[in-house]
Image (tube, rainbow, N blue to C red; front, side, top):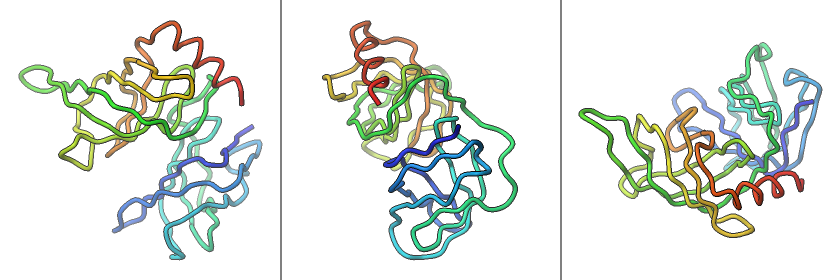
Length: 193
């Protein structure tokens, strides 16, 4: 079963335009990505758009061709054949304030850059961070790991995250280290859906 939860953040990339961030208004489910019904979304304006959608679901993350029209996001074209990141761990979408330091793999060595933003998706195995340094609108390239302090409902969570994928202001990663008390609290938080 593939589920796109209400409140999820989806990104539609259209040719010649800035990416459009969309928020899902209702949960949709289907047996396969190709069978998902149109997804009701909150869009910035009423403009009809076509592009590539970064679809975040309970099954993982994949990219599909999609059309945005009248507040509905509809998959078009061929169904996807791959999922970039599978999700076997319980997860929760949301917006949790985060600050931290990213470690860059640069020549001649590594350097550190402070970032701030929010965690938009958290699971017991990793997270999706949308953040930027103070002097840029994008994360710097070549991030190896991130030390994060995230404001969670039970208090501050501190974790070290290894980069899985990085695009513009988004970083998806898996935990390298986390305080054992935070591990327990996160497991309970994700399971409480």
